Length: 152
Image (cartoon, rainbow, N blue to C red; front, side, top):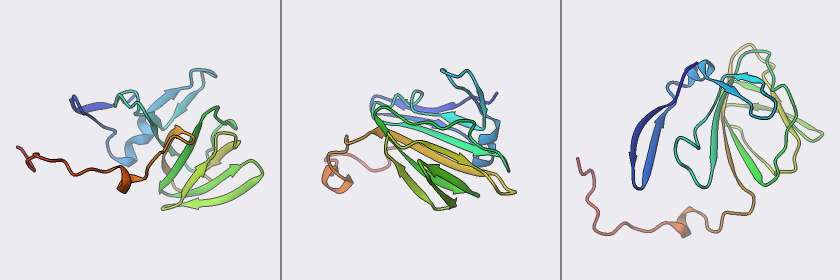
């Protein structure tokens, strides 16, 4: 089983390396509630010491699917399709996805996905507490005073 590598840690940052997108298939996740082995999935939030988001990367082989519908109590999810194509189902809506598709799903949405193609399907998923975004990036950003660029 492939493991995450920490690249850098400091007071104000953490960085991990998942490797090449084609290597996501080498990770295995054991679901803590169902104890199912899910190949091609890796979560990075905990190793990043994230306090506001969980991020996972998934690669589904051709003609594979998530083995169950799921939903969340508090977290919405944003999926970004990185490579390949397939389908998502949210409640009763089934729709095609491909590289560049971005999907937001409310916690209550019952979701499942599948790769109905002949090539791998890779995506990232970001979970955040619904309603927690107070400001968008421009309003929240500040210029960092007194910081040298590229201090190496």
